[in-house]
Each structure stands twice: as C-alpha cells, then as structure tokens.
Image 1: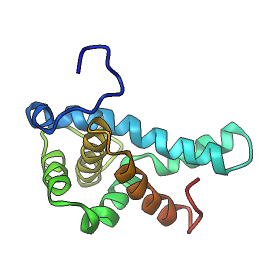
Image 2: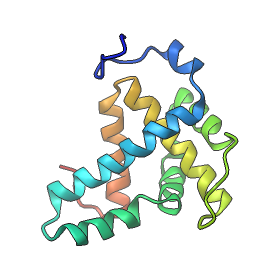
Image 3: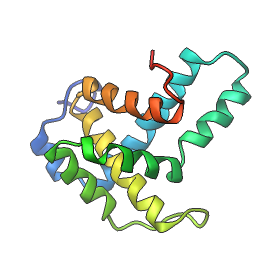
Length: 141
C-alpha cells in the first residue's frame, strides 16, 4: 500500500506493528460514521435530533455497553486486539469512568482493525448487532 492508497487493505503483519491506540484512533471515527450513517439513512427529522441521538450512541459509556454485547461474538484475533486496546495505556477524559473508557478503547481498536483490513462484511455484521441493541430491533439499512 502506498501513501495515497486509501482503499487498500492493510496486511495483518503491518497491523501487528501498529500501536494499538492507532487502531482505536481510526476505529473511533469509523464507529461514529457507522452510527451517523444509520441515523441519516433510517431516521427522519432534523439534524439536531440526529446529533442528539448520535451523541447518546457514540460515547464511552455506550461503546462500553456495545463492547460487552459483542465480546462473545469476537473471533480469536479480534479478541486479542480488543484486549490490547482495553489494556492500552491512555488517560480517560475527566467526564468518563476509566472502566468505560477502557472497554470503549478495546472496541474501537477492533473496529479500526476491521476497517484497515477491509473486512467490511464483518463490520456490517457487528454494527447490525449494535444497532439492533440500541435502536430496539430496527434494521440497519
């Protein structure tokens, strides 16, 4: 992959050399994008209402709940990445618990890993479960 190849999959060997917090960094953005895309595609209403909904779904506490929901579903490799992200040395912002932040970082690392390795079918499957859980069974479009 060259520096300007934005769509190519990153090899797992390259992923293994990346700091786990780098995976969480991109995973946080991808998580946000999935949630906001769902809301735009499936909710009618004003942007302010969608933003309020998104803020309730894309925060450390909600991501921690999503992590606990998905943990039994993770593959062995995803579980390894989750644990690395969960245990990564980082300081939570003052407005959230260290436990929620840790669980959320683990999930974000998994999302980042799946995104960078171009496993979009797997991302879609995991986010379908998240959406179904938080949006009370509505289908992901």
